[in-house]
Image (tube, rainbow, N blue to C red; front, side, top):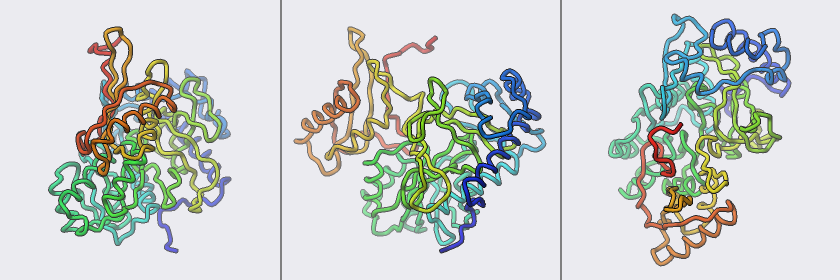
Length: 436
């Protein structure tokens, strides 16, 4: 077996716990000394660095939120002198001020190391050529994928997003074996490869995708159209370095995450109390060695769950489920909380429906809520099946999600493809420009 250069150095759960405790103590002390904002938060909570003696003391610490980052603009929660900051990245937030994050050289090096671990876990080696079709610039995606690719020793092809003609030309001429992209870009490229009749001219083996959820049927579609390529879901967020904070292994049993770099809690988003292992809740993260902007119990808003027990792949690294949704993209419809991923799963379970869909929510003249799902037929189904497919989706949503909906089944390829994240939810129930 090839030696893993970027695998964790701990070998037991006790070793991991000891490392996490050391990291937690360091993070709290570092943030308290270096950030006036953190010092105020910790003082208000009545916690000093000396109070952190066990991992259970994590519960004493206050939460950090996206609002803390926005309110501290342009250099929120920075805990080192500016002379140590070598880079700034920014989130693609849709409201208010962007979330800027500072990085030290150690932060950048740590990020490249554990991202290289992700590539390594997916089986990427020096023999691979990696086409990177994600955004560059202030975003963390492009530079993160590229730096780790080069650290592994693979050939990086930094194409960036969009430009389908160039993407296809590189697939044929440069023969990459790995494509890094969003799920939507993966589907777009898979369909384009088949439309252009070049599948036999390319040799993609792996698709590493992130930034958005992909349904079971969407993953299956991408894989099949690209000659049974293997798909790997890679999570990440700008606040927590960027992409590469975990990945699914070659056994594809959920996401291994880097517990030697951050502590992951799963909490009830309403009570903020821990949920039992295996139950869904909000992911809350605390970094263990992040210098410029350490995170203390940062509420990611991502919904996931811890997967108990060891993975069949043999890795000691713990696992969480693929991201189910976010607490802030949850749809509340007729007193029912619905995550788009629940609709993903329902649609994926119906033969004859494709992976692309939109959720349209509005109100009728009586102010009653209406949910209409526009979903594509699969490539192999025909128009005569549309009414039956619509009835089946209505029935399954009523059965599984307890709400009544309307459904429009449209031809395959009708809905727009995107090189970035596809917009899934269109909610016009609230039309005020600013909601108080």
